[in-house]
Image (cartoon, rainbow, N blue to C red; front, side, top):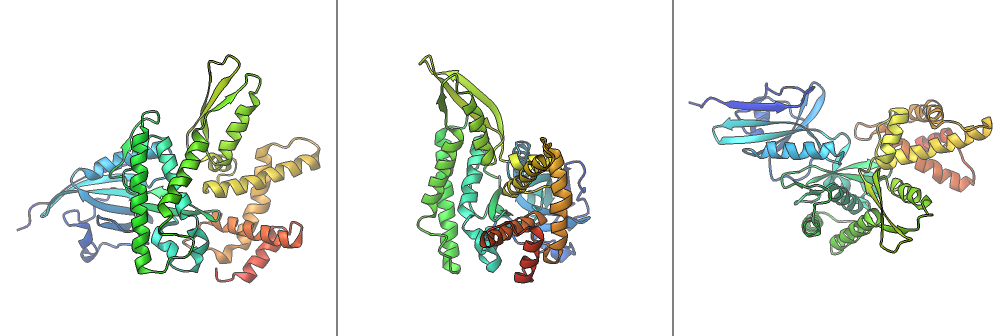
Length: 400
């Protein structure tokens, strides 16, 4: 006779209660019990992972040892509060089955995301593969800037989203995460994280290379060294301190703009004397890599990736300059953004509607069109316009 099943579920407000699922059974048996599971691309995981659809919302459930789901949920919650790129924690369950106590982490499925294996299947992903390692290095920099030690960076523990022709990496597995204050994460811990990153990713690519042909963009023997170099350059660019003279305060704004161009939002600016008497040391503290995303969303309501948002904001600033010249007065950025949204972005997406796919967000489709428009304009030696670029794009890539 089966022992009574027990489950305790903690869920964030505004989400389903998940009580109807057969928690007395391991996740791998749920499909046999009639639970409707969704087939979605997923990376390799040491623990069972399933995807469920509840009221048209997709969730990932990961089975873990007793108590581990709560710890990972809390770590993800802290990272989400710091606006770090990670999966969104929804809740966790403590279960008791005939196999003993266990726990299950519940996260929201990351829309339009790709496991790294999906980047090597089909021609559609070819252009994105070269950005794989840069995305990982960028993620590690963001985590360390926020005081987060990952402890298990790997391609399998990461998801990727297309972002204006490049990739943005998202942390998926937070089982080994340690969260420190940004000032208290020691260099030795960062170094340890980088060593683990290199070993794991070299191993991931070696395993992949043994199964399928790897394109020339990914060098098995050089991946770890490239990652370390890319990380180091980005870390130094963001954390460097500058020495300025008291009459060079304009360099503060230069530094802020340079960091904004990399997508980083700036929190505090620190100035302190060097002891030389006529010099100041400048240090800028970054918060997150969402500068253009926040700017675009506040102006238009559009949610986009950082690189996607930067491309769109460039268009909005161009429109601002044009409208200001035509009207012979400075035009507010909000007016330019409204003009762009009503007269360019929305009409362009309407033309591109035949190319919409469930696995491709509309912001990425629009950015692909912008890339094609730039290509045509370079050939024609003048701006061909969005409509002409759309017509040519639809003609050349009808089944994209």
